[in-house]
Image (cartoon, rainbow, N blue to C red; front, side, top):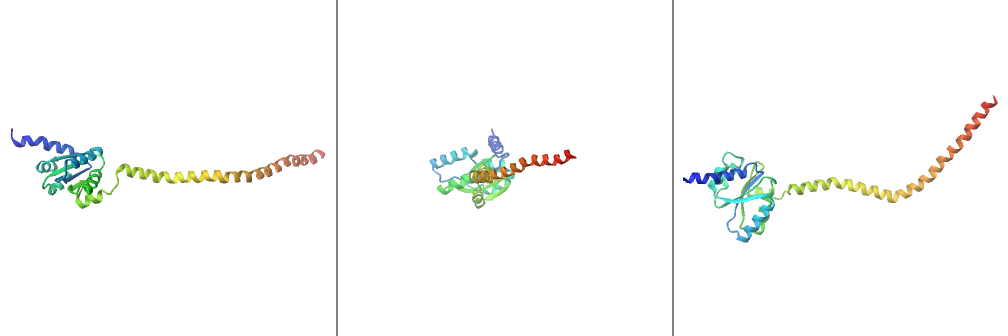
Length: 196
């Protein structure tokens, strides 16, 4: 069997992994200890990110004709690939955070939602919160005015409710008194009509 035939399934596997991917990030993993590598893989796996090591030639072939073709100049030295199909910023966020504690991990470059980024761009991108965090912030900011409004109404009901009830009682009595006098006025109006 020829070497090309042996490599083809690997290229197909890479192409399948990057198909419909939100982001792809390449890193140089040299110098990581086994414990660090295991911890990194665990964090990426928990975030739904696929992380694998492939030969550069295999990745280069898989990237051809795709939006990830711009990563070919990053394929020098040992490379690992982190692919996310759900959260576009997850690979950059996790890898940059991990690289702070493990300086041996070096970001090479990446493609996030069709845009090619170098290591500095990925570092800036990693500062963007996750989609879930952004949604929870949005929900919190939407609920805050409603909660504040409800709190104010509740305070008005507790404080002003008693005052309003006391003020309303004399007003109700005053409103009832003219209504009681009204029938007498109606009777006197009818009396002259009866005399005629």
